Length: 337
Image 1 (cartoon, rainbow, N blue to C red):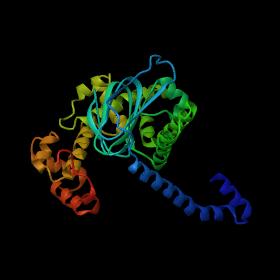
Image 2 (image 1 turned 180 degrees about the vertical axis):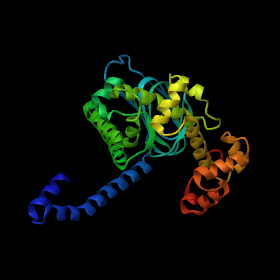
Image 3 (image 1 turned 45 degrees about the vertical axis):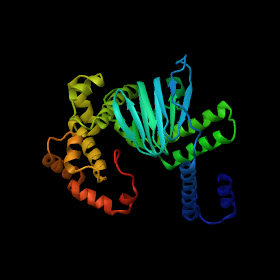
Image 4 (image 1 turned 120 degrees about the vertical axis):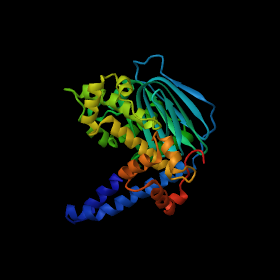
């Protein structure tokens, strides 16, 4: 691609800005075609069946080591005592369980966990999930710039990351790669993942602390509280428990949380419950009263009022609008249907 661009510049007498405007659509088309090819390959890729396995911290946690496990359909893995856990779910829904609770990670989404004692991940039929466990020295070696370090959280994969992971999996199945080649590919994936965390980085910049290291640690603790609220949607938030899990006092936790996220923990937890309720309402398996009970609301009336404030319409109207859309007709129903 670079050689082609250089040849075009040398053979054209157009002004730079005019040439850039002419080249832009072709670049976008090439990137779009590359992403489409990667997405189709990942959709059809079927790894060899594997039995439940264990991904544990290396015997020398001070060494820069990286471990990886690929989960296909109906597979599971347990990760223990690893400084960093990266769950890159490429296809289907992956169930993640840990001390923070349980959640279902959608396809083409990532989840980064920091310093968790034990995490279990399982896939369903047609699932495809890549897990990376790495020591802190490995994190520092692959991302030496403190400004680019990974942050705990969850998000959607960028197109660039999908293309890189396709390359990692395809080359792993066609040839035996040297360790340094494999590490370079994973380093490229981590850099792309770090670039896609711009919104999280903006939130981290608001965290209290005089140095970047202090802000990173504070933000990681607050992110763990957010993960707990996202997992425990069946109950109202308990600020005391969240503060204890974050190793902060209740006063400092509430103050730091509002400063970073712009709202108190209770309001954030309510939004998590309502977003989960909206996902449940996309299926015809549950009534509005059932969804209200599953998401920790006292009655259907209070649930309907809160749902309308957050989503902009009533639960029944949301369901009707979703099922009427072509996306709704083709999307999988909620678990249990």
